[in-house]
Amino acid sequence: MQNIRNKMASRGVEALDDRELLSLLVEDEALAGVLWESCGGSLSRLAAEPEARLRMIGGLGLKRARMLLTAAEFGRRVAAAGVAESDFVATSDDVVRLFRPRLERLTHEECWVVYLTSSNRIIERQRVSQGGVTGTVVDHRLIVKRALELLATQLILIHNHPSGTPEASAQDKLLTERIAKAAALFDIRLLDHLIIARDGDFSFRREGLIG
Image (tube, rainbow, N blue to C red):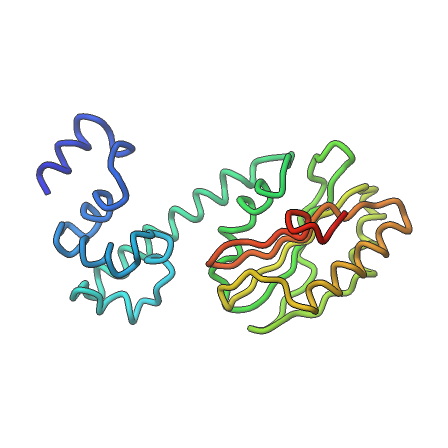
């Protein structure tokens, strides 16, 4: 542990790798090794563990489990605050970074729309639907109506999959088609439909499902 503390003191906390940072948080290198192996070397996977299971890994205990979850939530909120300050999006990856902290750990589905100008400036981010574990109902007419009110010329649809798998369902594809056709009637372009999950993300544009 002292070597890690010395490294941080001389080179800064940003010089620590993920496992070293984990060691400092739990104040035990051996325990950090057990945690590291249990999550397959992924801090995000470790942070996604429920408290009841996390506290049992390597005898971590309730206090340190809650400390890790608090640190993870702090990091998510810092990331969300940073990207929320952006007024423009250049790529779909920018939108994923914007919404991942908000959506990836939810236990229910939410659907959001980002309304944009022709120069990709964000006009508004709006939650248009909130549902259960397996789905949510989205009214494509209300989405287009709001775009017209805002004088938006482009929009991006985003929703999450609480199951952890980002693959698009038949219902997701049908919704995308309906919104794209309805928006096109008013010269509004659906740029992408993004699905965010713990195991990754799915882009309709990247997969060639939106022209």
